[in-house]
Length: 232
Image 1 (tube, helix red, strand yellow):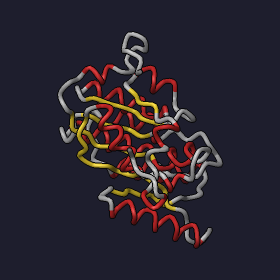
Image 2: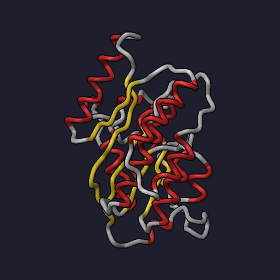
Image 3: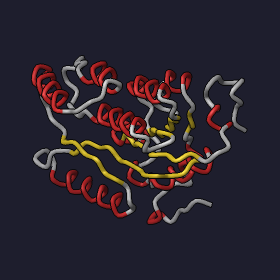
């Protein structure tokens, strides 16, 4: 049985809404992969089945599923690159929108310059600018590969909320970097929901916003069909 909103403030207030809400699902594929792999081979899990489980639990309607991922370099490992591209094509066949960025290895100075150029090229509204400047120009890790995936997701969530394209932004990620975007979406009277596995799930996300924990029992029902397992 799920805890009540009184037991865990804010966590399940989403369940109190009886009217079905239309939602876009934003999947942070990099975050999903790295935290899921201790349980399963991530590619064996059918993200569309995970999404359908969430819709049933939270009484929401799917408008779209978006898969945000970085692409490995073919020069680094051709086999890994081909496997990754094949997996992305499977997602597209299921009707999932795949949004990618190429992995790069850059110095902090190069990263900051490229981010500033990209930021200037975007036609951002006054509501979007604060969250972009807060996270997009913050360069702290000298060794991390530059991806920009989390910023891309945050901007898309806010834009779709502002443009009234959704009632609820559903994030499949446990990254606390999305807190500013969630705050902004709530300020414009749209709903938010985060869903993730226990490992790597930010306490800040769970304490401040409605959430759904995707435990091992749930994911055991979400294997791809070629594994011979289906949701019962």
